[in-house]
Length: 162
Image (cartoon, rainbow, N blue to C red; front, side, top):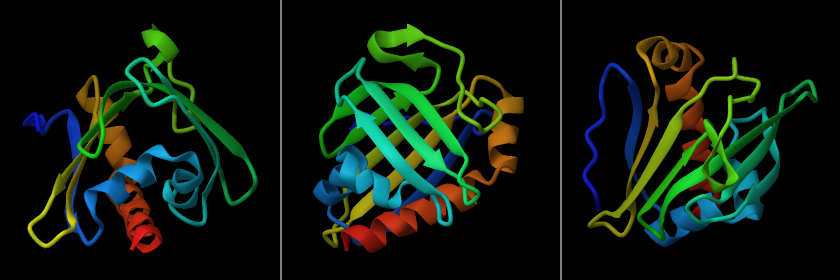
């Protein structure tokens, strides 16, 4: 796997070893029917997922708040390496078209890098990195609860795929 070194001033990192095989983690991230079951921390829900799994392909999810408000998130895949690496961004749409993010989260633009690596125990060493253009955006994402929200979603992935 490409070794990526996060920038602590610009990037947020969630890293764990989980008891789910890499192929199952990949499936959870890339199959819409699975992604919708775990991707948004409860009591929020993911109610739609339209994934075109290729570099330049669309990555569109719609989240629903506990009050029923919908938050569509449109993005684009940048790198797709099955069972190993998924990189997507909210600052481009399909076919790498630049766009201002519109996602109900203060329209926060970021690029996500999900690294999946087999661990010796049969599970997965999982690392998710949210990369930001500047320190203010990174702090905004952190203050919004990146660690708690992405951690809760990962717990839901583990529960679903175990």
